[in-house]
Length: 344
Image 1 (cartoon, rainbow, N blue to C red):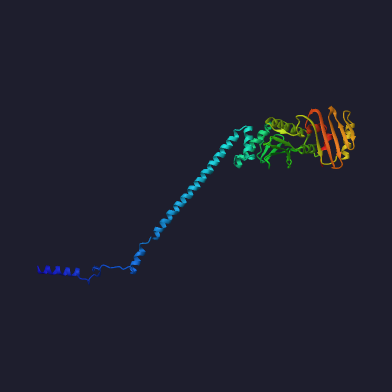
Image 2: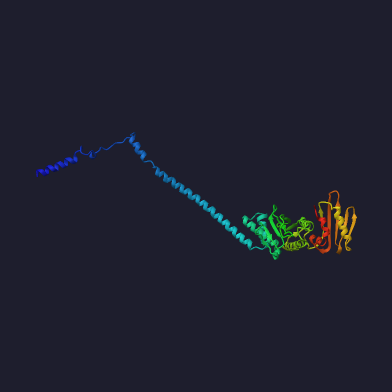
């Protein structure tokens, strides 16, 4: 029994002996003072950590990014709505007749009260010009796959473009007698949709006469075909409401007009005309004044030649009496008169 008691005492002594394990010492409660460096160290420990700051900044950036994405999305929706509206407008153009196209032309190009994309504007010009030259549809009219803004027909091509004053300019090309197209386009006419007027350039008619009878680029048959088909176009445009000034291409009425040639007619040209008329019993050549001549033709048709020394020009006055003719058709019947119109 005594032995067991001794063992128990030894165990107790081991447990309470401070020299055996310093970690088991009971430490006194520490009192901290404001100026104590330890307090400052602990105060630093309660400040937000770098990780906490990073989370806050990340949160702010997220909301900024989301707001920017929201604005980008609004812009995309706006662009999509505009594109959809433009597609609907292009569909509407395809369904429109001439009067509707004319109205859209004035709204977009003249008053600019309506906006449209470049594609829609191009489509409007395509549809509008087709309506203007629609009679050529019977001669294989189609949009060219080789030349921009160009209509092709069986015998010639017509190019179109919008000009500075919202008029539409038309130029034409015709294959030469060997079947090739010449490089130069001939400016033919300008269409003014706002005022519903058309200006035909007489120089285009004079160029055709010259290229046919002097340069031999075209044949007289080509010229006649061009005159006939373009007069169908002119008649159609008049039916649409367009007004034409007097011009050398229109054959809807008798030709009774004057044109000024920017040079005097050479004496040798007058001599050849005189010889031709003297060899034909129904023709006559008269001098009716100082450098003023009258060429009388059959059917009461006449050409008057008035030379002007001061301006070095010549005024030609053509009269087909009661016969409806263009200058191409008139001089096509009297090719010996064509040299009067050649300006070189």
